[in-house]
Amino acid sequence: MRSSNPVFSRRGFSRATGYAGFNAPPQAGAAANPYAGANPYAQGGNPYAQDQQQVTQAPPQYSPQTRPMTMDDVVMRTGMTLGTLIVGATAGWLFLTGSLGFAFGAGLVAMVLGVIQSFKRTPSPALILGYAGLEGLFLGALSGFINDLPQLHGAPMQAVLGTMAVFVAMLVAYKTRIIRVTARFTRFVIIAGLGFFLLSMVNVLFMVFSGGDGLGFRSGGLGIVFGIVGVVLGALFLALDFKQVEDGVAYGAPREESWLAAFGLTTTLVWIYVEMLRLISILRGD
Image (tube, rainbow, N blue to C red; front, side):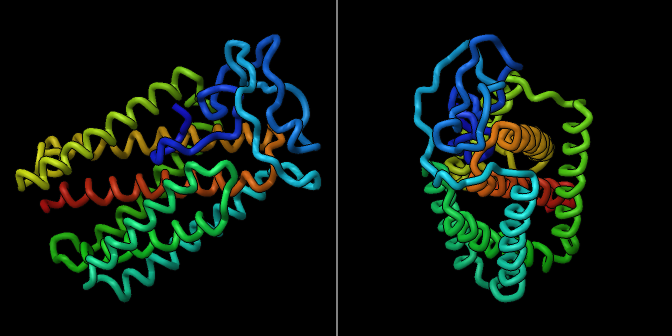
């Protein structure tokens, strides 16, 4: 398990262990900072190495002039990624509401771009921004279609506000250490996320081959419970993303890695928005 994010395969800033940099407190004999050889600004040992494991995978090679990642880098690139997604969503809302087939095609391409980035050793701004733009087209068209339904008018705005509330609440909970991201916490969230994803895929298969609502995860009381679980899991993934960013800054990760932080935060926020929109739709009777 390498990831802290719903794409599940996105690597983290720490390559010394299998938990994407969300590991135990400093230990004696900890593995060396995996960025020390690739980035002259990265100093010291890995403060999050666990069980005295050694680096088993060489970090990506960056220019010797690469400076370390800062919080400003993460904020700027996250703003660029989310801004691209919002531009795409606006275009989808205005022009693709009546062309859901094209919108779903854009969503499929976005997913492919996201998977490709997840398996790349270094972040690709073109892939990340392309993913954001196409995902925005899909979400905008879907949201516009839902908003045009009389019984669901205003639901997308409610989902946006709900997603923002979850983000702020989790940021406050993380910064005040109400939520502490440990190795055990990370394992639990990733396993739960994988289970949620697999159940969703099984439900889709049942819907395709047997029709109706499949296993019933998308409507009624069970659908509401499943939706709440989805939102909660997305919130917990946000905590892992915050930890990954914090570790990367403290660790001296190269500046280019801030694109991975932007990618992770964007995919998590998309997850929360989609689950929030589905939950609101069920609660409002569709």
